[in-house]
Image (cartoon, rainbow, N blue to C red; front, side):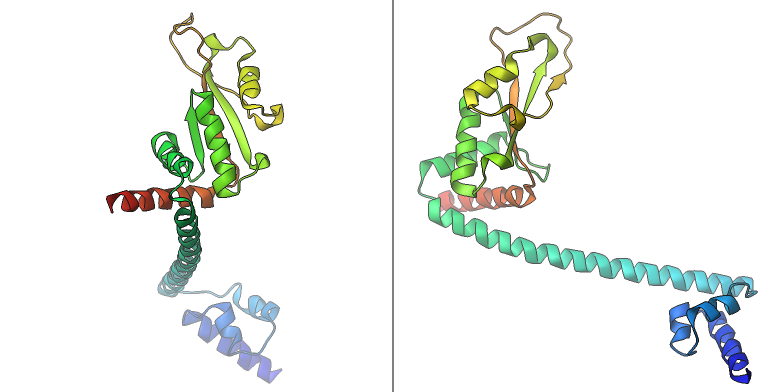
Length: 224
């Protein structure tokens, strides 16, 4: 019993010095439940409370900095692997016209800030070419590719999506929900307008990064 009293007194003294429960348990060999019981109603002065709070905040800040650093290092390690993969692909296909055409097309029409591989165009031939490009050079499969129609409602007669599916020979389940764009016009302004179609690749953060490397490598290649 005397030893427990000594442990309790020591725990209280350490707590007032600003030590955390885990730090106190490193010096006072008791169960955490006992420690909680001893300290839960511990009266602290204003300065002691402020000291504990500031120490906790510092620990949290250090923990966040460490976690952020670890995440950054993992990201950099991952991106080094992706850069090497992109260089290997580029070196293998840089003399093929279709490969270079795909890079330029994405450079012109593809998403730049989404962190996903996406390209939108009104020309079905462009969409077909990019679909073939993805499969040939990037290992993308039909199951990875989705399409989404963007159109003003005034042009949608209920057959536009079917028109795109027929052109591309794509199953209905590859099409995501159509997006209707705002317009002030109540009647059609362009004859034969079929809207814009976006082709996108699921889970494509890596591919999006690789496209940026392709662009940089292409610029360096043609400068030389």
